[in-house]
Length: 311
Image 1: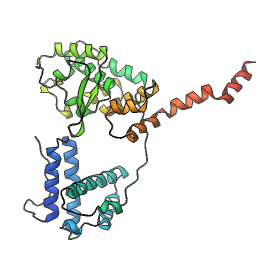
Image 2: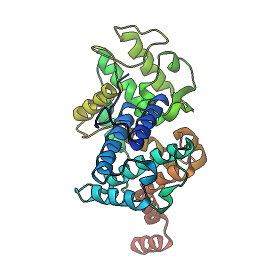
Image 3: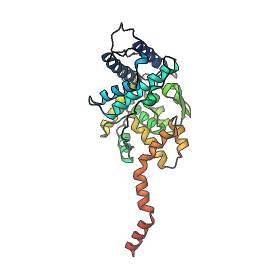
Image 4: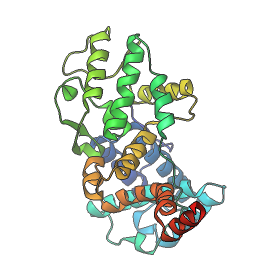
């Protein structure tokens, strides 16, 4: 497994450095994604560099005011609000871990200003875009069969990229399937007959003939890594004329289309694997255009205006 080292002096033994090293070890133990590990290591390396500049080497010396100064310095680089929020969340996660380990007593983040970001509603795929994506996967070559199966699994389950990458051949041999998500959490997902058939065609054509316990997704050089799957999806998007195309837009599309078709929020929360209903409710914002069209069609005033025009 690849590890992501702190960009600091290897011989550093101060309390803050050692605590952060132990925290990153804990992150690796809980099977976080390589991208998550890299993000935590990058952010905490920058925080340590800032702490050294200000002679802060002990955990007790990290105060709410000091964290606020660091976040302000990040913002003034300049950095996007999303980046500032990422630094805040990473530091808060580290401090929460330190409290659980009884390395510190106080929750200093009760007095740290949380960065506010503008909520940007990202659209789901349209019916025409989905059609173009599936057309980009047409063909008898086994790689095109794989691409079609991958797209259908993403559309059918709303799975995260990590969850799709962790699937084995055995995982999709029955219905429902179990998706392994963040922090080894598991959830149930279902595959439509069309998706099941696409998977069978792909596996039958795959020259590697993977066994039940081997990874589900393969490329010309062997089993696909997580980054390999992301690259496959990106290439499908280029062929379909939809760039950039990533796995998460299929997840948004699954949620949006499910709500459009009448699925209630509680069951969508279970299918999406959200820990909080508040996360699921964010997808309601994507239905604004649908609600606007419904208002235009059913508003009493609009109905009266149409009736008058028809006289």
